Image 1: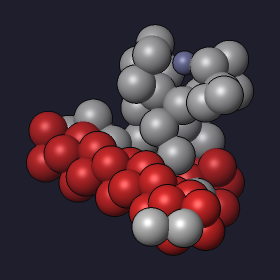
Image 2: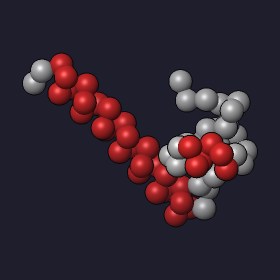
Image 3: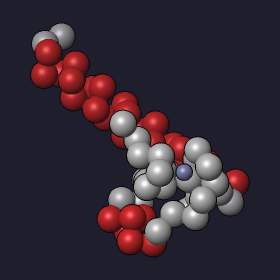
Image 4: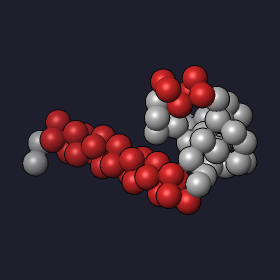
Length: 61
Ligand SMILES: [Zn+2]
């Protein structure tokens, strides 16, 4: 497998994990909450990125 394919696979896998996480949080009722501190996420942040699961204090690095 070449580097481009490996990079693409890792990007897609990470996205899938985040989609899985968002679906799970929707089912559990914790969507719109920071996964670190439980703070409510800003609507603007979620409309910009529906998969967002961190507040401003706990940015995903
Ligand atoms: Zn937080």
